[in-house]
Image (cartoon, rainbow, N blue to C red; front, top):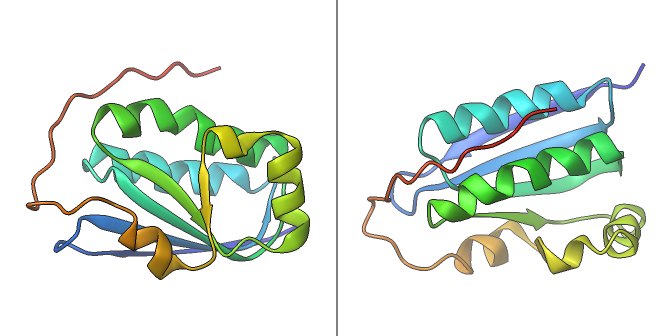
Length: 132
């Protein structure tokens, strides 16, 4: 059984939430990441950077988490940005053509800097999400 470690840091200044993930994101661990993402959105945290430097593998269940949240995030002027992918994970990302939906950055700082400046307030449009 694989393990996953998730740590979260949030900035009120730029409203960016940084989620550091280590381990494997698969069907046995994806639920933990889903809980973190759901918690962020419930608290109107729509600017998310996922630091994937410590992630060795992402299954379809893991990729599905990112895709399932992107509509609500973007409807609220936010985004999900991926940072620090290892080569094997990046190759799958490209193969699945997620580069058309999610942007990847070489560092967390580069991902954070790509968010537009904010006044600290975000609109609350709450797009609906369907769950399978």
